[in-house]
Length: 167
Length: 180
Image (cartoon, rainbow over all chains, first blue to last red; front, top):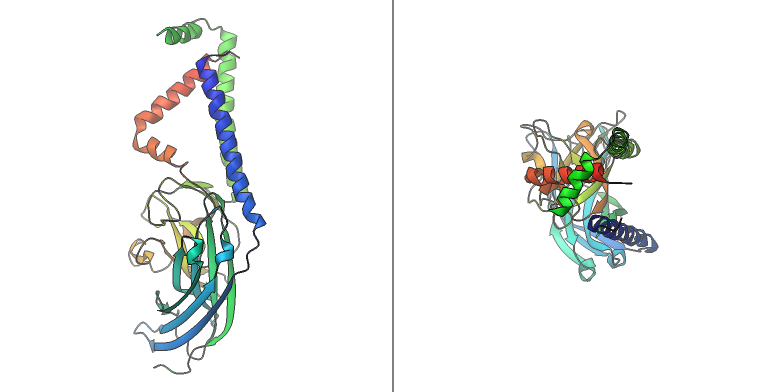
């Protein structure tokens, strides 16, 4: 009954149970945090706007992104992945989401930032529907925990419009 | 040596009825593991509810050996989600983030482009030749939860099969010789 094997087994089971419980509690404690992030984005310039040889429209833009995501961080946060996507609808597609810029914020210190950047990923439509197109710029963030459930949310910044003609 | 001898003696001294009990308890362990796995498949709606991260393409978010819990619902796929997808002609599923989504009016069909956080470019090079987008049927699930390091157990066991057989052998022996 009190052999080495049984004691080792009991010890292992107990420590694994405690570890699992602690992970679950750490993940649940994230729910107590009610973040209030802020963001603003400006389109500084349309660098180019053309129709590719494939027939798809492509835009090159310069963006000014500033955001304060510090309130997203808790003790169980490993990193925050943040990205800005252009979102619009066309006659063909009910929803288009094109990621323009993203970044990884490893610590709370870096969560308040302001950058001017060109689009990191190509802004290409499926087809030729971008002239005069209204679009939203949406800042999404995905909170990656040290352990447990992942959180995601977004801030929609509406009211952007592409030019009527290519340039 | 004494311990091993004892174990062998206990195997030898077993009666038929006791043997049957051991067989049943071994069967219970195997079937309950199967029930848990299949139950998870039902709840999550994904054909593999748990996956182990094998590459460093999502670092520093997910490292090799981390475990992801998947969920597959009818909800549409959106940019930013981390999805697990299969590419035709590739054995191993890939865990990457969605960066572009084009959803068709009416039919709800989607074209999706993915990228690993730690990779420089998007995943078109990983897709089948000439494939520009992922469709719904390529995607096995989206990651909803995360547990670090635990996946190393399976990585070690697949890369060093000897350890796997040793472990299974030892556990089997323990179950057979346990006197309860």
